[in-house]
Length: 191
Length: 191
DNA sequence: ACTAATTATGTGAGCGCTTACTCACTCATG
DNA sequence: CATGAGTGAGTAAGCGCTCACATAATTAGT
Image (cartoon, rainbow over all chains, first blue to last red):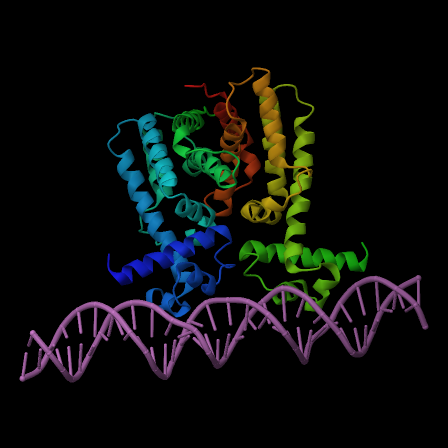
């Protein structure tokens, strides 16, 4: 790794940790520099602004996660298997870099509006999978956004609870339950 | 209503709207004053600080919601009916004052740590209900926090989607689906 | 291979600006 | 005339960001 890239990575990691611990707005560029052991001005050799640094961090993870989820689901034929693949992939991503994951989860509402429309999108992947499953009659038809929200919520809220420290251990330990639960949600019959 | 209380209410409402539109950190006291049609100094006749105003808003809603959920659930005998009562109560609260609801939902992670341990707590109500249902064998035993998170996630993520504008109409229109889905999640058998 | 020139990277004091909050004052009410 | 409510210019502190300078890395010229 080049020296400059190493510096850039250190800035990103320091920023990430502070953004999660406090928040983007409450983290100062001085704190980031201190945590990364560089001068404040150095941040601006690598990023045009604090806001852009925060956005870069989000978008990179957002896009990469979307692609990973899509690749994980693609080879499987039925909805049940696709769900499990998506859930497992998501949980493993979370466990692999929990700080980055928590940052992504807690700052969705701040950055989601700034995701380019054509960029890969984790939510779009899930929507698409559910859409096809409804079309093929694997699960009852229902508003896709509503179904997707309910199914995604099962995993996301559990992850949120883990951020709050309400339970321990890797998320991936519960892939089986999450998959069963998401499947159950999508299988709910129209009343 | 006294004039002073009216002023206080106007400050709270103006702050709420701005806190949701931007965020607490990005909303200035000047903006709040402008939106409430009062002088900036007046805010400090009613609140010791901007942060305390934000916290007050959160805690009042948090406590009242917890009590409402508890009262809604109490008269019903079985888990199935308790779930529906809780879901309906929650959705109706959301629909009744969407701005306040969105504020509460989007700022949980910022304020949850500051809720007094003995204060009424929406999450504790749900935990308790699930706990009893597991004890009586209505649903399979499992880590309560995990079950609660998954069940709560169904409704919360849907609500979040509504905040993002991904679907329209009142939340309460989907009480049936949410209840069925939460019940299905809690009924998932141990694998 | 050596040097000179150019560019990339790192530094931190300091700038302009915004912020939350204060306070001396006015006014309305009982 | 005592008190509580409202005012808004003012203040100190903190913010993101810049820039003149130092140094390291890369390239060009001979």
